[in-house]
Length: 260
Image 1: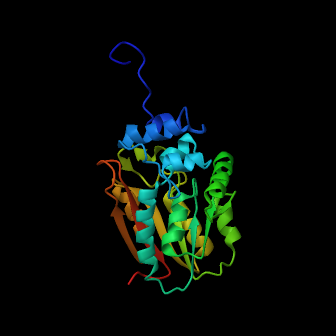
Image 2 (image 1 turned 60 degrees about the vertical axis):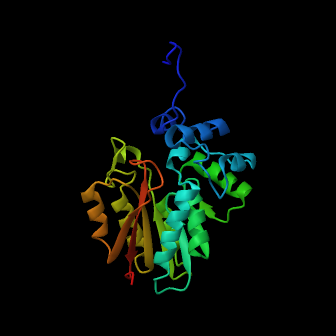
Image 3 (image 1 turned 90 degrees about the vertical axis):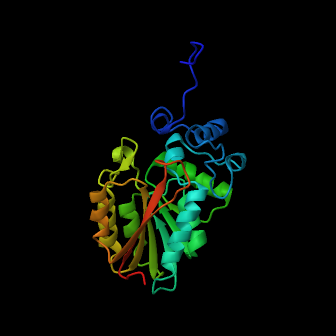
């Protein structure tokens, strides 16, 4: 309730958008209010290189669940730069960027752009998210191959890629894995990150792989150690661009080669 006894405005936080607004297309005021309520910035959800009022005017739309799961431009560009730096050390000539849980496709857009990948392929199983993202990529002119399938079948369909390096972005829905909103347990994402890595290496393990796993600034240590033990080289980073306790991070790891 507000101070005057009248119902107050509902804060557009993570839990509200994952609940009542999960599959609703957000209006432009709601997109901007989400940014204000959580990050004091109405332009927080800038996507595809455009501010909210710009991509909305061009016909792009996002769902409530996408608003809290997607990687905005500022973060996606930082991730893309770090991936590009690691990819440059690979003994490879050409690369393909693959997003196993594409969502809005914005992270994949920035990875392809900054890492110089020859092509970009994203998998999205959810019917509603896939259809909306497909339309968004078209109206925004984003060159991504969006595949309506699970990451398991999508990886199988990649068959024999022509590229010598596969950049694999891994960001399954966090769901309840963000314990108490402050600590991310990678064993409880949907599906668990370790399972995703095992499926990927089991399918494409004969290739040189560069994994980029999205993290939170506070990660359950054992769940992270379980991942890094799989690889010859790995590094983590936290991006301090949000208020403390709300920052994302990244795990970079190689398979089939080691960063020099």
